Length: 230
Image (cartoon, rainbow, N blue to C red; front, side, top):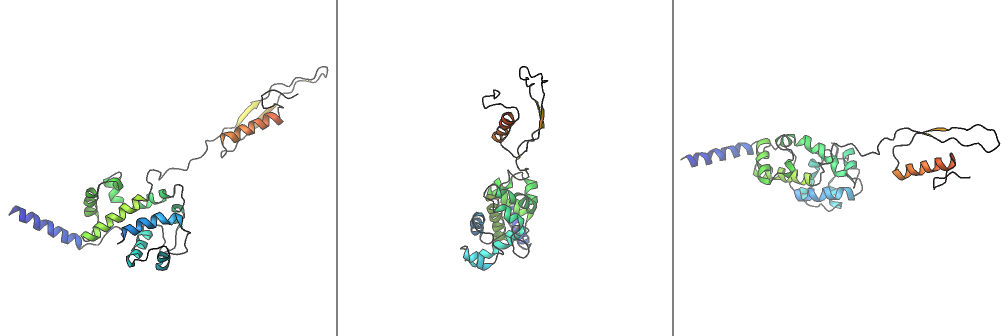
């Protein structure tokens, strides 16, 4: 009797869940979404996403257009299906995948509250999380999960939120040249030269070395060997 009650209770909860609307974006073709996310950086930036564009990119299935609502949800497309600034960032071959990290964390916030890395959780754990935080029937829940996994496969979470690497700030350098000895018999006093150098921050070490060498050569009269030119 207890087993029958448990089964009936579970079936009732499933019916109640199926009667609620899905809370997360999803496509009915997650496999196509994976291919599209892979192709976007390789394609020219289109003026607008529509069925004709998708077909020209090889997405001719009638269900492929459901990907557009996912792209709009994560901010790749605007309300009028035009590519956004996030789309332009995602197109970058170097580090573009990090552009989706913050939008995905925002959309799937309950999942990131339950796990530091929900995109690494096994399917069973994701099924539990989506059952708790979303709605829809069994098929809709599965498509939400597969959509989430597809998005995360083409997103870099490790590099998100980090400031771009810059060359370290170079302090102002003050150097004093040794006193230049007067020519014999000239009676001229020794001259001391103080040079203050402001170096730019966006140069390589070799650039800095070349600048110092040029200063030594043209101001202090030193050769590459470090000796004073006669």
